[in-house]
Length: 162
Length: 280
Image 1 (tube, one colour):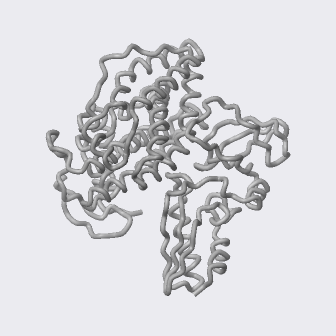
Image 2 (cartoon, helix red, strand yellow; image 1 turned 180 degrees about the vertical axis):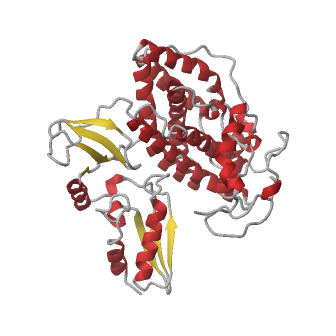
Image 3 (spheres, one colour; image 1 turned 90 degrees about the vertical axis):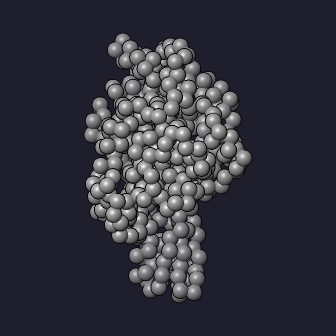
């Protein structure tokens, strides 16, 4: 049986299917690993409630561990604590930026929501300028917002804070 | 339903058999399991609204909005999936989120009338969304602290996503109300049309009383006060007028729906009922 560190090393090779530049571990959806006599249980949490990629991540995690000789793999999905982009570490944020996705800002805490859009400007991942405009808080996947950079003219995605 | 009443074989993770329970309970049936009934109300609100919003996919006025609508629909259906799965577990009759979504008739749905209202024009869709989002964010905020761990977990997660919906719909209400003469008139007409469905959101009955004893306590008075101030604030910024109270329509929580729901379910449930147990 693989050790805990070896299992994490395997999971580190499983990419987020929609943002393949970071792994499921870096995304923060792998919450725990339990090693039994003949099976490994991976505790995962969904990013967004309706994210269509979660099933695929679950299948990819299972396949990766089975391919490394783990006899049986279970994925246990939990909702608590709710996933937050604050779990994405500095290294993964840099990978996102280099891939052309602005990394998330700090997640809003507390129950209430600011209805006006007084948010700090998101820096363009291509030229670094903060002269950018939010086009929509909903983008190509559940986790992204769409911006445009006024300095270099590029449209870009932001991994939105949740 | 006669066509569906054969077991199509068990396959995990899919609708594996046609239901073997009465599809539509008579209205006078006392509520056997208040917790599952309460969860059906929460889940059906989001399932029905999620389906309605998804009807804009491919039809929204601009591409960004098409994408936003599809994302919001996905979130809502995701919330419904979690809640209905829990409702099925609590009920203990083997119904999954999929059997609950696809194999109940409209009289067994427990959503509020507001969310089944047809999309109408873009103003009706956005005002409906705003009225619901404001309620939903405030409700999740309370339920995230409730005494039922499973529900509190779903609430805490859904709250984070619903905040994005509320910001989106309230910005649209302001943009439409404070926009052109045409958009202003349509937004006002949408509020006037939909206002009669808002009273139902704040009703309380024996189901709410029963789940309170399980630790699911919602302070509807404070929820209403906060909802009023949020709605009034957005109405003011949108230069719109709050409709006159009165003539509230109700019945969704006990399965008495408008004609619109049956038509919507016919579309939503057709494939699952025509091909029970199908996978792809």
